[in-house]
Image (cartoon, each protein chain N blue to C red):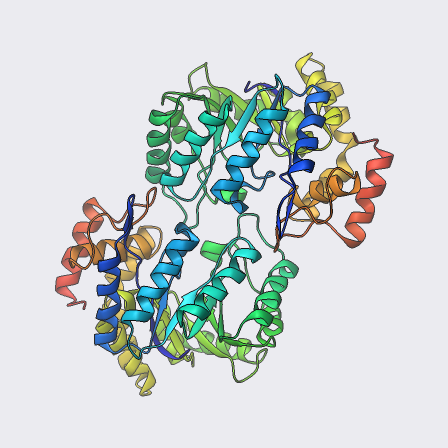
Length: 297
Length: 297
């Protein structure tokens, strides 16, 4: 489950609530595209902006519509207490795995983060992916800490925030991490713009934002890398440079993929919770052109 | 209300719930000490870790025990929808003002932050303090944005994260901000270690973490500065240097004041929500000695 293309869909919502029908359609889109797993309630799924009840509902919808595609449920929360509840919800809803970020308001210490994973890992009966994303959690993992957490029961994968742009450096970054963790623990790359690099450098999985809205485009890159055709994976990713450029200009991927889902008619506008706003104006116009020109799908 | 010493108490809790009795005692301690206002459910009050129901309960307890001391209620939340609900709760509970941070999971843009304040300011019937704290919100206000927000209805104060250590630079920092905002809007300093500098530089208020657990110590500094005795305010603050040193060594003030409240017997141990942990080991030992040596109270 923690290998290949893991697609992370949006959770479409507005000020009145979830758009359950649109969410179910997004899941069905990913199933039809044949992604390797679906990661719901990740950062792209706006887990942090939903109530516990809304999250349980989203997860049940995902499992209901995912068919045979494994569902990974984000269980991040500020409190350990809530993470444990979400882990139970994931188990009872029939999720296949869980994804746990060290979400913070007060920046966490390494000791606090280890304590969180230790508590949760011992309570779990599902495989867990460690979600390393300093951009949203404000926590920077050391490889040493990754190594300690990876020894805990049920830890099965690590979602790393990215790899260096240089191929040799990317490989050495992945190798350094692998040297700290058991071989049963997979490594998955995120940060879509460098995902081809990550896969070419030996990452087992791509935890993918664009995979949630353009699964065919993300799968083409993934399958090329998996077939050992590094050059083709790189070429397909470099073709998308104008899209990666939008991500970096507009504060990350979320506002761009939200606009993309709106433009494709997959969700209604708005689909993000205020104060967040999807890409608008000139950036949105460029995005609409890119979707056509690059035949994103 | 947004001047003098505003004391920010902890909200004592554990994995089972709030410690309401201890919270009420903290409020009574502040009332007895004669602080100028009480800021509940700020960062020190762990607002981000509580449910909406728990927050409403904490606020009602604060108002019930605060007597004639004005109560400022933190209404920060990730979603605008929840901030509006919390603003209504604050009004119906009888709070005197509200404090609003641009809390984030996805880093916010200036446009999104302005949109949040604009929406809330127009719905409010209480004075609002803008809470500028990049350390927990990941958002850095420009003075220009402060100026735009300060023009909105009901905006009455700005809580700035600190001032430079140099007296002249501190004054010029406060003056630069004042040049952007209407004169009805007060400026309050936070970051306890530089609060004396801030007050000496012309800040109207100290939004104080140590004021929540050592109100007499914080009041002595505040009153000296208010009386124009800058030198005495500085001396009293410099005396506390070993305490400021603990703050910087242990990831901020929260874990230290939580341990201080535990050591003083004001709250039970633990009083922070996991995964957060109060100061322990060697740091806690140094803190216990400091409380005695510096006669913190």
